[in-house]
Amino acid sequence: MDTRTKILTPFQADQRVRELLQSGGKVAAAWARFDPLTADHGRGAGKLRAEADLLIILLASDKTAACVCDEATRAQLAAALEAVDLVLICDEAEAAAASEQWASSLIDLEASVARDVAADVLRRHEDC
Image (cartoon, rainbow, N blue to C red; front, side, top):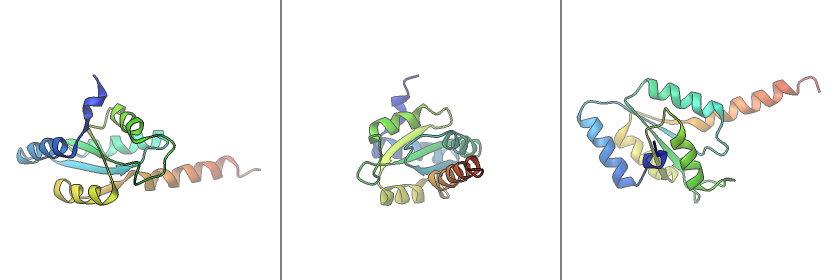
């Protein structure tokens, strides 16, 4: 599968999500930077997808987040995750508005990942 087909424009994403909602499906929406993409992102996405019929990643645009990788690269990485159905590049305000329309809540995947990375670093270096 060409995972780039999961990366949609706002209009395309809105159409796909509305079709699913009209048929009674449940949508999970997650805000993320994926810079860097970690295993915790993958686990978090998997958990969200298990609870919904569709998982859309609302990916922080380059104008929103200062990242090492550009938004196109980060979008392709996000789309490569098996649990991710759609990727939409947007800013934080657009993500909040989209989530209000499509999902019951917007999950911040970065919040749990940041805590886990920091805790992991501290655990690894507690004897130093």
